[in-house]
Length: 100
Image (cartoon, rainbow, N blue to C red; front, side, top):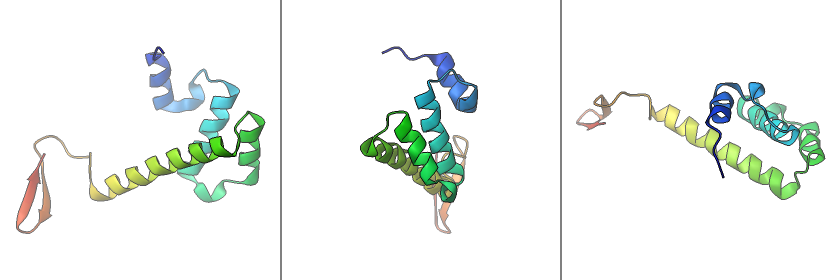
């Protein structure tokens, strides 16, 4: 498999600008909605996934992977992980600190 660096770059910037199949676009539309506004996910979103070939197992896998990444990113954001520059000190408590 060859990784298309240009496609990866475009998807990272905005997947809506990427040259994707209809199936890929609908999957990413679902993932974006699940990420930004999870309460707005509807039966219609699931029907759209089924119409492009996702079965229940595939829909569950997409949901679980996206949800797991959303969860982990929120945990990391809440702890300030990944936002500090190398060499910065993160205070862990009043008596200790961690150097990156």
